[in-house]
Image (cartoon, rainbow, N blue to C red; front, side, top):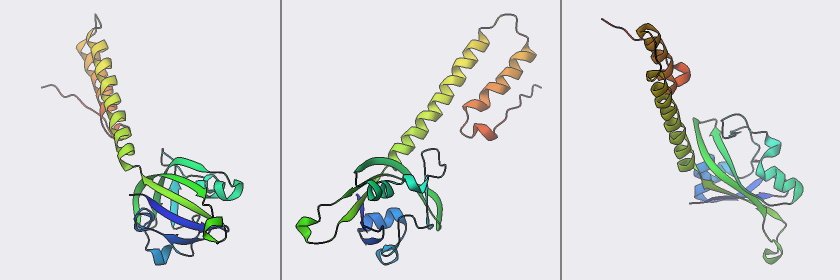
Amino acid sequence: GHGAVYLSADGYIFASNPAAEFFLGLSSHALHGRKITDPFWQWVRQDASPFEIEQHPALIALTTGERVSNQLMGIRTQNNEAITWVRVSAFFEDSAAHQSPPHLCLIFEDASDQKDLEHKLKERVKELNAFYSLTALIELEHITLEVLYQRLAEILPKSWQHDHAACARITIH
């Protein structure tokens, strides 16, 4: 489901639902009274680099009053090294109907499936690029076996999942 937290005009969380508690890694009791900028959470971009906190949808909405929609972000908590991927939207709810001061609604939508599909697609692209390189290599004329084997050992690791840490060696008996 969708997670929701409500923030006061000065940025403090005062209400949450169970899905938000799951995404943010804290109980409602532990969430209430914290700011979304609390160092308990590390917000990251799609490439897992740190997200500048000034660019967080909640802070943009609190500062400008404008709605921010569907910002893809990762959340890493102090309790867990894994990143939880969410789409975040932030907007002010109409408080006139509720006879209460203005408050910001922050919605979290699970984006883990999308990130998983993106990862799988990147892996398939690496494999197809390697197949293309292998095909081009095989079509070369006047290539020695030694050069062929060396180029095979250079091409194959690029198609593997952890290509930055992979290497290949061809041993012929």
